[in-house]
Length: 367
Ligand code: IPM
Ligand code: MG
Image 1 (cartoon, rainbow, N blue to C red):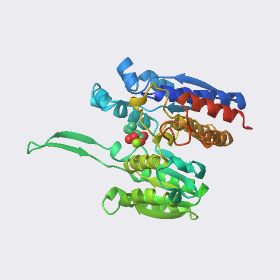
Image 2: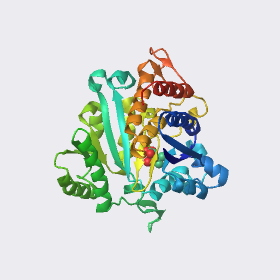
Image 3: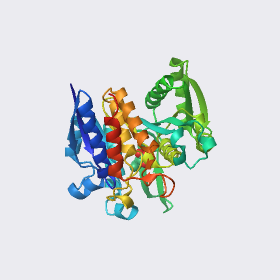
Image 4: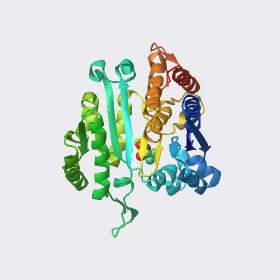
């Protein structure tokens, strides 16, 4: 019997309600497998700031340090509410980036997955979706502009100015390319390298290091594509991509575009992997406008559990079952409100209902 401690960071907005559904799934998995999960909810994000004056309190750090893995809900407030918190304490800068830095979670896996049967959720035409979209975006998560030096002030000419630095060293670049090439090796053996080397020196080094690392993966075909062109092709021909690797900021933008191709950011789980610790989170925000209404889509949160089973607990079979259970709920004609409009031929279901249906589908599957 394996026993794992999981830190649960419910977060803000819709975070707590989609976390509730993820916990239902974890509890079911315990009944089906020789595994026990010790689950500890701990404050994180804007809610933590309002409760204890710190978006990433020391007590939360201690729970995360002691955990085998971390499951994190979305964080953040709407624009107006955000202004109640000092800029550096706002949950993105005050909690999320420090979490990524603390555990050096440099490898961010963001699957963009839509089987053919669910192509109707996508805003793209059926002929563009073809046999379905199945892309793994690999985003470097602890470098680049996000973590470079930042300076704001008034210059000698009396003008306000800002200076933020895009910094990578070759070890950081090498580490993410190794992850990307190894992932491509296990999948279709094609890696799209996303860069902007016609302008950015950071991309020149990025590409240079890739040429070195790829020698260890001779079977993987590497295609280079400029980030702006990649944005176009993601819309025009998403099926040309399998594994894509990119630096932090490009990955932030293109992975949201991935959600757009699927039809909703609600379909975007993710895994953030570091050398010692990993955390799992939906790629989307906290959607404060729909918080507490029981209409949010918990797919990204439950999908993040599936990724946790695979990456942290070595349970690939049960992870695959969970993906299938989620897809089966959609395939049976149900949909949360983010994916379909009433009257589009699907039956609208709530957050809780989606979770319950996933649990029922998984419970009916052989282990
Ligand atoms: C994401 C989010 C974060 C990011 C925000 C909340 C800081 O958009 O995980 O993609 O920009 O990395
Ligand atoms: Mg983002």
